[in-house]
Length: 76
Image 1 (cartoon, one colour):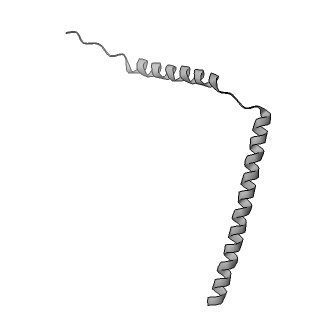
Image 2 (spheres, rainbow, N blue to C red):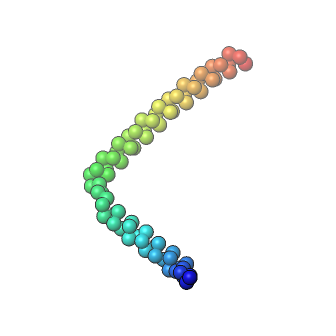
C-alpha cells in the first residue's frame, strides 16, 4: 500500500493564511459602514453618557467621604 505524502508544512500554512485573508476580504465586503453623521452622533452620545456617569460617581464619592468623615469625627 502506497503512503500518501503529506504536503509541506510551509505550503499548508501559506494556504491557510491565504484562505484566511480571502475570507476576511469577502466578509469585509458585507459590512455596512456608518456615515460620518452617524459616527458623530454616536460619539456624542457616548461622551454624554460618560460625563453623566462621571458626575454620579463624583457625587457618590463626595457624599460617602462626607459620611465617613462625620463618623470618624463622632468616634474620635
